[in-house]
Image (cartoon, rainbow, N blue to C red; front, side, top):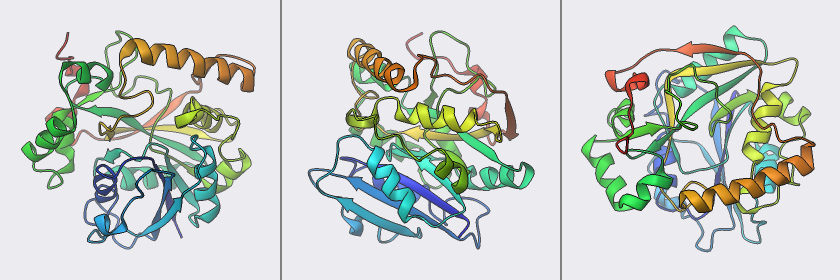
Length: 299
């Protein structure tokens, strides 16, 4: 098998069918004949996911339901890795994300170009700005549902750029070549992920703390890998009440400080951002994808 997507869920009954739609054969471009699977792990949701909610989609799902789950997704990631079969793995630690339609095609192209790439997809919010800010101004699931109806999603997945906003750090001007410090959809060889030891289960906070950044940094900084950022493709976060994504800014900053303390205790430093160079691969599928022109509605 060529590709395994490791998709981790907690309390995402609304979001997961859309996430799976965006991983389906009818949505992703240029994957005719691709031998792939989505290993979906429901990590102890109080109300389990219902497979009937995605039964009509053309997407090969292996569903794992963990009832007595640890609140960190680390164990769920490692279980998904152990159960998966692909020579390439794609980690999506937050299952509430929706992809644009060319992610698979371009990511696999990077593996054809480079010997051992780590391929990262840029993080976007659905909505006018970072959801920590937009929820304070009334952004919620009902508003988001209407935005998706307005663009007739999933008819043209690239229209997500019209209703989303890129993740930025501080006040920087965003563009496709800004250095990424994490991705919620990134690809690596199975052998590399196994060499890294999978997810470090010492990251034991609910939601995993900085576990995603840790896996990303260790993969990108590995001496044998080439880091690749995709241009013109995105991974869009649906609002769902996440541990850091959908809380107020002050509460989020306090939580991130605790996460950074744990990262230092595990890794011995506080440097979660890679300094490795990146290569770039992609296109600009529509006018809205010219994110250098994006301005926050709150600016």
